[in-house]
Length: 586
Image (cartoon, rainbow, N blue to C red):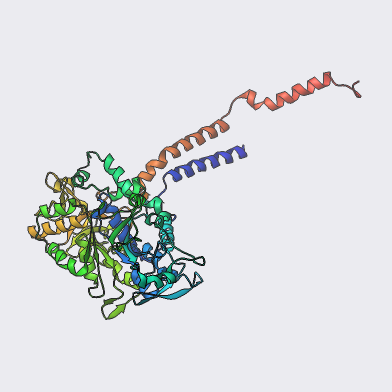
């Protein structure tokens, strides 16, 4: 009896454990493998938020930033040591890498060093040596090739290949030549640099082979062609707007989560010198790599881009101008130099204008400091590398506490500083109970915004009826939509700040759109009421079964069951007394 009761109690507890498992308070998806990066939490949240809200936007409309590896090479030489910080830069949100590739006409391979290696000299592959070409001396490591760069990129893509961490990268090539004119005067050059029996040629003979290590992650021309062949009329008004473009590009969400591609390889400039020994682009190259003939690309200097961006930031343009920007498919890169360096303000302005800044100067002046180390440069500039957030935002320090204890609200006071407003400097986290105007976006024309005049309201009070017919309370999902919203604010003469549909009320530091009760895609939550509802059925059933079994034990009246042991003992004794044998049966 005691053992059976214990078993029943254990069964009762198991029922509740099962119910508790189903009602797990907080289960974070895809975050168990998240690497700790050098970014502080604010920057980490800012990067993820901008990526998430931009998922419906075509790839060419996404403004990201990156660096030229040449700046690393000039500081530390063309060696493996020079790219030691590359992985850290990728982890901290850098999304574009520009590389100068040199076609060596003597050896017919692609290399990173701008000078050929004398083939009549034997090198230790790991040694750094001085090599000269065109009266310039370089420090190069003989065994250092593009394979080393691809290995770092591949490692990053492998480790971050989750819904929580995945982002989209740009690998940009500038093609150049190590060229010589063949003549009697250059015979001596061939004797020095032409391969011989002692030569150990390191490098790839084709562009396709150069990027083979990351081929499975590449968003290629073939992948783009396949996507375009399957594009159909979408019932989603937002997608239908961008499908009006002459050159249709897939959205970030389609590339990352449907096609599972992570990187685009694009040739920015092709300065290969015409020669009998020049490199010819092959059909295999064109299957993996974009050229200007297959993907419209623009490259501007920081000096040339400044007036263009200044005009856009004047916010005096009409909706047609912004629609034209949204529907013109073009990757628009802006590259700085030592004579025209990026500043913290200018780089954010370029991103707001939809340009993709590439850091190419060897050093930067910030305040009274001169910064040359690439890692330090990105640490200094990273807070400004967003078209959305203002520098230092989102301010997540307010999420752990609230100064609204004096207010009597039904909602949790801890949700106070968890709603986002737009200011003239960008987005920032604000008090959800403050009363501001709201941003309403046209359902079919993303660059058409309206800010209703009249009474201002808290974030929690915003409802569907607050926007005119055909408009929704929304947020800008691209830099162009951001400019069009700010232009509408200026034309309507509305004061900042203004509510946009973005908050992290449900889960701290997981910013989502869709109102105060929108769910975080990476973490499920269970409210107290929902938890009670989930556990109640299992609890009731367990209690009923336990009571029924206990009553059956306590109130049992079955005499046959009660006397069963005594009856069989008596029956067996009588049987053995009549059939008992003495001795051993024969």
